[in-house]
Length: 331
Image (cartoon, rainbow, N blue to C red; front, side, top):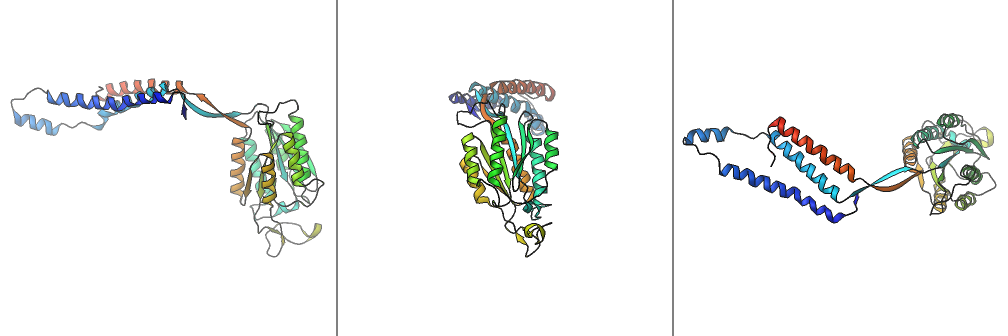
């Protein structure tokens, strides 16, 4: 909260001034009370006379009304956020074989699918969302759209495959976002109204482009990349088929499948995004919920003087109504 004319907040001094005046008037009434000839009767009345706290409620509400009116004179401004026009976000998800690991419950991929579904439901409905998966190569599963049902279907169809080609996945995601934002001008910061959210649980093992080459493509296009490193350092898969790995995860002595948070953090840094680390299902849900509430939104301030004026008028009416209902006195 800020104020266009903060010096006018000095008008708030009227609130303690009214309190002092009310106290002085109350003392004045007691000083000039009607005289009693029978002091015993007067003492009994004075001792038994109690002022219930409810009689002071109208006065307190009146003070709040005065405070709101005084604050309104300083022209308050509040920070608000709203969806960016024509925004597009591409969800880029790793579906390598290591996503079968169960160090994140129920599996790494299962936790990622749940978090992305939360993200889809959190993002403003006007924002277009796309879905790209990558393993040994990259595939566009859902072109950017506002149809959330299609996104949910695409997320549900994700299955673990083979290797990890982060750089190639970034290249495809950049092309998808650029195509969806074709003709949309960049902002003053040189960024397009879009972003890529990259989730991966390991280091690159396949592909033509390196992760940082993919990051440079995103930077040149004016796209921020937010990265999520999923998994713990003790995640494993049992030895078996398909190059030594198959099935579920977590068996002692199995094949280690560690995330690569350093590379993902560098991708985010190069593109002006932000990096995250998720070692549990709850943490990845929180990350995607936060991203859904912040990415593709812009923050600005607007004057909210009318809110304070309205609150002041309402509180004044409430004060008058309570005064009549409780018999309380206003100065």
